[in-house]
Length: 215
Image (cartoon, rainbow, N blue to C red; front, top):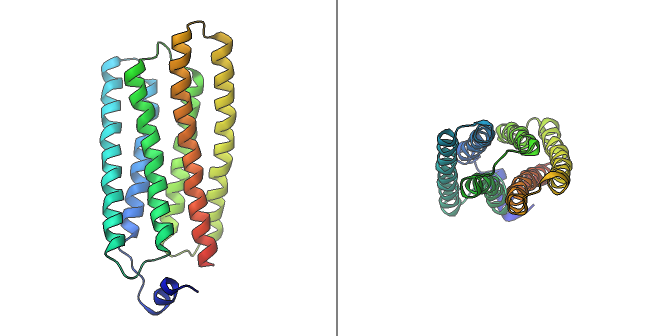
C-alpha cells in the first residue's frame, strides 16, 4: 500500500472529484452526439452551427480538466492515485479534442459527400462515449467492479469494430473516389475519427487500471 492509499484508508473519502468526472463524461457524450448530427445535416448553415457547438463543448471540456487539475493540486487526500486521476481526466479530454478536430476539418475541407463510414464511426464514438459514461458513474463506490470491467471490455470491442470501419472506409475511398484532393481530405477526417476511438480505449484502460489497484 503506497502512502496515498494509506491515508485514504485512514481519512474520509474525498468526494469532490466525482462531480468533475461525471461532468467530463457527460460532456463527452454530448459532443459525440453533436458530431453525428453535424454529419447528417444537409444544410451548410446547420453544419456550421453544430461545428460551433462542438467547439464550445471542447472549451467546456478544457475548463473541466483545468478545474480538476487545480483540485488535484490543492488536495492532500484523493479517491485514488493522483497519476490515475490525471490520466483519466486527460484521456477523456483527448477524445473530445479529436472529435472537435474532426469537426474543424469538416469546416476547413467541406467534403462534397459524406461517406457512410463517417456516420458509422460517429456511431462507434457515441456508443463508446456512453459506455465510458456508464463506467464513470459507477466508479465512485466501486461496488460494481464487474459492471465497470464489462463496460471497459465493451469499449475495447467498440474500438476493434471502429478499426474495421476505418479500414473499410480507406478501401472505399481508394476504390471509388476519383478526385485526388477530395480523397486526401476525406482520408484526413477519417483518420481523426479513428483516433477518437483509439482514445476512448485509452480511457477504458485507465479505468481498468484504477479497478485493479483498488481491488
